[in-house]
Image (cartoon, rainbow, N blue to C red; front, side, top):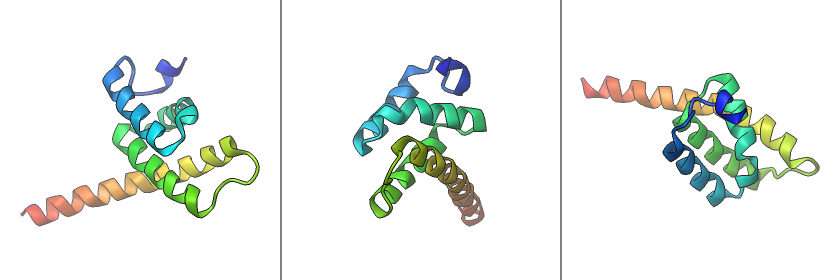
Length: 99
């Protein structure tokens, strides 16, 4: 089921990279949820990594008080959008300054 929801179908090297990030920040148990959310919304690996780093930052500022999984899902969806915007902005700047 998880393989159907993610653009990382069968590319286990990319999944291992994501696992390393999730283990390092303490959200390894929520990796399947993150892949499900990102896959259903159409985000790629770079955006997932950027978003989970942003979630980690928010975790230390405003940790969940009751339901960690629901908190993660809500914040992760928000941070996925921010991550895509940040990445697109960075790429646009690089193209602009490359000229």
